[in-house]
Image (cartoon, rainbow, N blue to C red; front, side):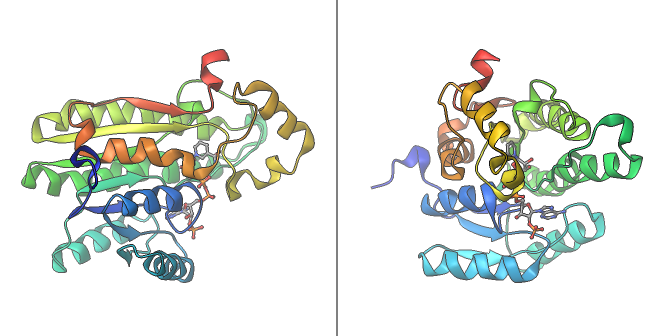
Length: 255
Ligand code: NDP
């Protein structure tokens, strides 16, 4: 029997960027705890494949493809949920991109794209979700930060600024919405094995750096975020608000 503190039965979770990578792993973890998942990504085909595979695994999943940077698409998606009687009880703001370039070579448009995708989307989608959560008197928001929520790294300035912003957005959400029964928290993953890092994983020098600097001496697996995601989506975290949990193999403990 599932411990009621971690039981997500009857809950619906919108996980942005859950067609693959960390979002997909967290979506499957939330589904295994009982939640119905709204699967998101920009590519409808990839979203449909993820939904199909999740259903085959026995999970409840629906397709919700939209671009998190397109405010009109976000508004349409929430209007569609309302019309279908779907209440988003749990929002995981996970969709994100990374773009590596030294700041002196960085175009303003690339800076803006990274900020829009990794930070502004979390505000826009969080606002739409929270309006409805406030009306219902409960809700869970989990924003995905990064090690760069805590410290800067070279060649990823807009990403660092966006993820630092995610930490403070999470605190702002908690400050405004805690009294309405909403808990907003964040997860800061370390270096994880996903498509986003494929070039780095295949770069022997970078691979050696990650393994050398991480106390766990290895990259993280996407499934290793599930514990934090389920905790922050479940009744177990009902008095936890505005926090960021780093899931990084101990990296921040030593850097
Ligand atoms: P991946 O590149 O593997 O997956 C990204 C996911 O986000 C895909 O499902 C993609 O779907 C979706 N996505 C990207 N842009 C948009 C958009 N505009 N609208 C909707 N969906 C979008 O990334 P990861 O799984 O590695 O990263 C997930 C999150 O975790 C990001 O926020 C990232 O910054 C963060 N993170 C990752 C770390 C890592 O080591 N991997 C470390 C720390 C944080 P599609 O391509 O079909 O649109």
